[in-house]
Amino acid sequence: MKITSVECYAGAYLFVRVNTDAGISGWGECGLAYGRCTEAAFGNCQDFAKAVIGMDPFDTEKIWNHLHRHTFWGMGGGVTLTAAMAAIDTACWDIKGKALGLPVYKLLGGKTNETLRCYASQLQNGWRKAAQSGGVAMLYTPEEYYEVTKEAISEGYDAVKVDPVFCPPEPVDFAVIGNTLGHHVRGSYPLKELEIAKERIAAVREAAGPYADILIETHSLIDTNTAIQLARTLEPFNIMYLEEPTCPENPELFKVIAQHTSIPLATGERSYSRWGFRQFFQDRSLSMIQPDLCNTGGITETKKICDMAEVYDMGVQIHVCGGPLATAAALQVEAVIPNFIIHEEHCANLKAEYRKYGTHCYCPENGVYTIPDLPGIGEEVPEETLAQCRKVVIA
Image 1 (cartoon, helix red, strand yellow):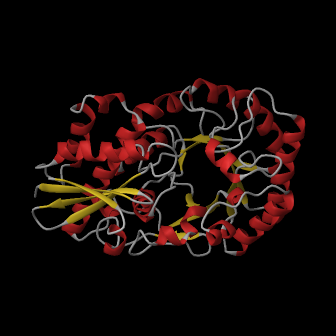
Image 2 (cartoon, rainbow, N blue to C red):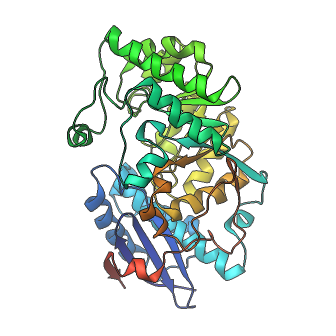
């Protein structure tokens, strides 16, 4: 079997369809439809597509190493490169599963997890309220945090994730906060703002009850000093973990933060490939890793990262903030790995736009996912949606 062409698509999400001379096509997502890298990633998908024409999609190790070592910039890493690699790699795994009539999890070793617990993610953005508006609903008051948590818990979730920093203390024009991607607090946490963050999480704990898990997200909007201040303030609320307390490019800082709080730390969506996670493993500053399969190199690389984490007794929650292809691929890997902890169900998955990009659009029931058993990753993009996307074909 040979790859004959790669179709690169840009819509609400970035993704590829890899075609073969056997008439089997595979799908993979590039995880950079949010933030400020969309055009670069779309271009990298096209560049790397040219490098795999004529290769056998079953040779996923060979293809990954070819893109890593023989494209010059691949060895330097960088998210637009590893995201393009991820899209192509995932599509090849999808082809393998379809050709063999098996779900990808079977090809990776089979299930160690029959079902996958998940959490309601990014409640500060409104959960159902945001989905109904088609955008993001910024929550400010403790009462709003209480209500949105009650809503998620009523749907069967026993874990929620909240960023108490993202929304500033007082309401602002969303265009302002949207352009900065969150409210930054660095250097020293103003006591008034620290109290507001505490009140928000206190409301979440009250609404969730004593036994539900609370995950704290901060999107690297704080730094080492303010992360320590925030963590110490939130310790009484029995937090499951603190995500991205600062920029992951200097792993030494996570070690410092970990030494000053009892809350376990996590990061991963802005760490790429095994090399990006290496120091976190070596100093064991993390308790949970969150590799984004669509950003860190695809199924081939993510499985290796998760296996490395198990050596250091680190749990895994694959970061999922993309389209239905991203969700489906993550479920396949999470089904296999013994150190799986929890799956991220992002609030963006509730939007009508999300559902246009999948023929199946898998959803959890009572806060739990079952793993798709269809061949490949078990998800495709409908033709009517493809017609609305920009398309470049590499052959």
